Image (cartoon, rainbow, N blue to C red; front, side, top):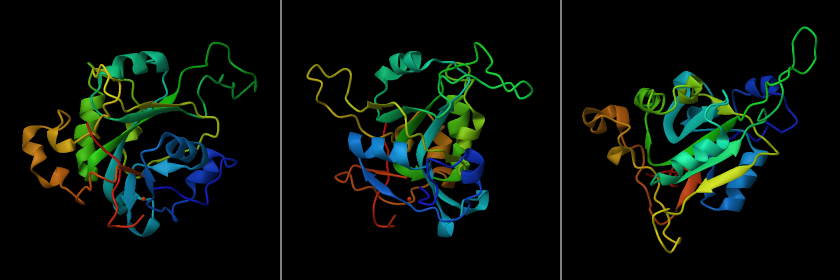
Length: 232
């Protein structure tokens, strides 16, 4: 979902007051179109009821978002480590990437406070319920993966601020393919290690819509017959 009333000129606090007007948007898997979306629109990972951004209004989750703001891992370390992943994802830097913090008392820049800050968008083959985000959170914040992840990444009603100067990276070609032409699929929740076997057939990971494989579209909120992002 995105909100057309939120502009790059707004502060995050101003944008946060826009609790209505969120629209489900379908974007083709096209580097230029997705880059434009990231640089011009605030977005949510979810589809919401009647355009309202509230915890009780989340209908379905169409993307997994991972928000890294602690400086660990670095952007390059993440890209290097996840190059082996067998599903599509997008990485982009956030507004505060490599920016020095300002001391609230002196109003001066604080040395050595600039860190890599970036976000990962993982489109899903099938949408999942908001309850399923508990499994997603447990998986990605595991000590073996990214315990420093911002835990608010797993709130279905959270929105992410637009960054006009974002650096955007795409992982969509199979790194094991010697021809470098085989396109990776979207992350499939039903065939992913993220969810325990017992949860895969429960309502906590129900299919909200069927997926037209030929459309290959990335959804951020639009028409109910059309498809969102995703795969592993």
